[in-house]
Length: 70
Image (cartoon, rainbow, N blue to C red; front, top):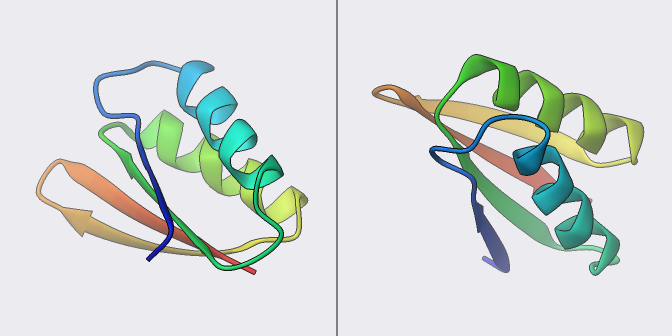
């Protein structure tokens, strides 16, 4: 799949900063992001979309799996 960013257990802004570093290092492909709170899901989604990435989100219990692609 490419890069996986595991930001579970972290509060913003840390998940956003981790994803920002990951997407800046890629020109395409996919980045999988694991978060466990709504604020992180929303903030990571906003960052990705503003950076030109498409985002799909799936819930897995209390966790969210975001797939960023370009």
